[in-house]
Length: 245
Image 1 (cartoon, rainbow, N blue to C red):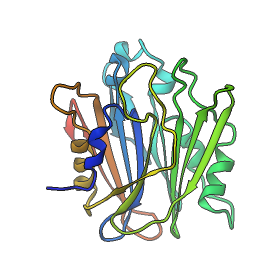
Image 2 (image 1 turned 180 degrees about the vertical axis):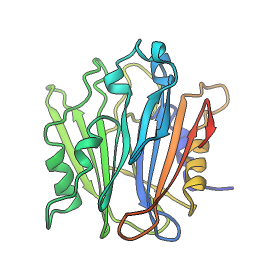
Image 3 (image 1 turned 30 degrees about the vertical axis):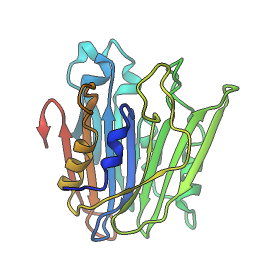
């Protein structure tokens, strides 16, 4: 069955990715996926914990061979009137109500002003972040490393349409060294499901490797907001080494 996410299969290694959009029936949705090449990146899972979803280790000793500060973090956090998502600890700075009259893009630009790209030379992985706000506001934000070493920031306020989503990832897709980072506006994808479970499964399946290539999938998750005040959410998580949650 076509899911609308098939174009992700051409991205051999996207790193981590965020999709914000609306389900087919018009409910706000956040999709998040983790892929990893190194043993420390693979030794993780997504887990529902309190008001959100965290990346957590499946093997503490293997995880320590990488940088735990960059590998363990709140991927998604729920807060009054919104949902925050990112590929790092900056999620905590997003999970606060915006100022009165502040647009989603202005909000992300303000709360992420102190954050730069990740200190993982020579890749310098971008920090990708997003928010969904009650009332219809949605935005994605990325901090890349410029050629001169400065932080290059881009923010995108998103149109929300039923059955459509916008995606950014840390890497552009090819699996080569050094990894080419995402460079461009969010890509448009289709969201043909209505439930968190259906969309998480579609995302996880879309990231499956082509024949003869390595499977870099770690986990995929989807959050669907079930009421206009953002007080109720449905969550579905698929971990490669554990199955569905």
